[in-house]
Image (cartoon, rainbow over all chains, first blue to last red):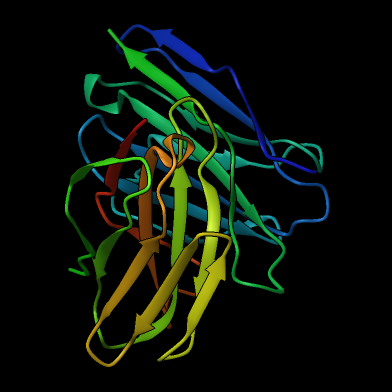
Length: 113
Length: 114
């Protein structure tokens, strides 16, 4: 069964460094998402992406964040200058757009020290 | 601010017990209600997507109901098994969210003891 994959599973970085989290969505999907969960808090929406542009973004998704679909298969989330409060589990999801279902990857745990 | 609440936060039951949890969501601008099952270190797995008031869905021993007028959904597990141990998440999708943004509850953590 097709699945969303994410790499790496765990990333440790120092404050101020740039990180890129990578996702490979399901191949025929057209809608792509990033969510995150800070430990002990709710899963929260970051951004949705369709037709090579951002459809919607949350207040969290400021200028330090960007998304890209560089080659038609990968979907990346870049954090330019990480802060301690960016430590969280980051989930990628994708959807066909013909039904409501979003398929989630297993997440990347980002630890900023 | 749209808020989605789930109760209880955690539940410990014996194998064979039936159980249910609640998801409360805004009753206006409703588009869909999603239920996910999430085991540690795995991807959250979609259980149900519910769109119509009064909807009931079933998958094996798990079923869910939806009341959009009052803003709640129940998830039922009949005859819980240890493999049902997981966190169950609900997520609200509003009609004005063009990109399919999901607003999640905090989850109900279910532990089933053999």
